[in-house]
Length: 199
Image (cartoon, rainbow, N blue to C red):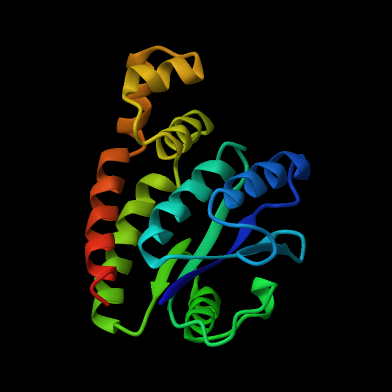
């Protein structure tokens, strides 16, 4: 079983492409190597394969990376399933994980994050949770995004240490995490992790 995230950047033509493109590459690199595990194609679309348990947090990590640029956001579909054929390029690999991810991505309307696996009941529950979480995450400011990205990348650091990393006060870190719903995202991720690993 693997997870495949298919995504694209909303408003990608606005602002400096290089800024978000380099940041996205840096984030994707933390989950594997290009082009085997991830690729950016058609200018603003990307695909990433990884273990299912890490997919939801990775999606939030990517969102926090992109939303550091004020005008941008990202649409993502998580597909869970098998990998029948593994190519040296992810965009040429195949299997139900890729199909689920592609179908899920095509079905994204206003919702910017969704999941499709072979377990419809679990998908239904998770997609309701995602739509609720998006009420918060779609409104992350660039400051909140920067703090959440740093917190995801440094799970062992407490708020004081995160504040030091970002040269901010501990109270501003605490406030940003609260505004961004970070604690709730971690709880949702734990629920996701537990249920997806039972697949």
